[in-house]
Amino acid sequence: MIIVTGATGRLGGLIVARLLDRVPADRVGVSVRDPKKAQALADRGVRVRQGSFTEPAGLAHAFEGASQILLVSVDRMGEETVRQHRTAVEAAVEAGARRVVYTAQMGASPASRFQACRDHAATERDLAASGLSWTSLRNGFHAASGLDFLARGLESGQVALPADGPVCWTAHEDLAEAAAVVLADEGRFEGPTPSLTGSEALTFADLAGLAGATRTTVPDADFVRHLRADGVPAETADQLLGIFAAARADEFATTDPTLAELLGHEPVSMRTLLRDRLTG
Image (cartoon, rainbow, N blue to C red):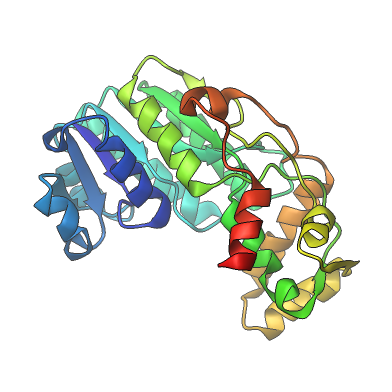
């Protein structure tokens, strides 16, 4: 039994879909906060159980009988996130799982300038101390995030963001396919994977140029102030600024062939995703 958490989210849902291409539905289970949202999976024969990283008792039921568990990292940052991941790792141990696969990020390091990467490094330490076999998927930076940062600038023709650096933007669909491949082949990796990235690192200046927009640099303090004015909490605004600080330090610039090897073809490029956004 392979259990996938967060299966009603974007990445988790794609992973389950790709996994069902490889293994029978009765070997797949999902742990979700709201089972009603996973009814379509239940209809296909997938085991659906309620589970939350904040409720150990529920996770014990959701993880029952698991041989492998895919922990999709929560979409938040900070110590509470690390605690939730630790709860899930402990539940995996209690359930008797033999392997945990975790969705981390390229650049995961306690010294990263981006909070999420520091959180991923902390969870990797917990996995290493768990006694379980484990794999940490060092996913390339989500292309969808880059497109979201670009959205306002694409409308106005002025991409106004803090100074950045090259980033290996990577599609959710490719990362989901890679996760399914790793789950279906238990011996593929132990510990952190190489960075699972596209074949090209692009800056926001590169992306603005491709979109026919102008790239202007906004001081860090102004970026945070604009986010606060839009209702973003102060802590979150500072964390988002960390993406640009990390990019300036080339934390997301490394390209690696591992993702292409897992997929059996080249990952979709950010150029293609941007073109699709502009013409969609």
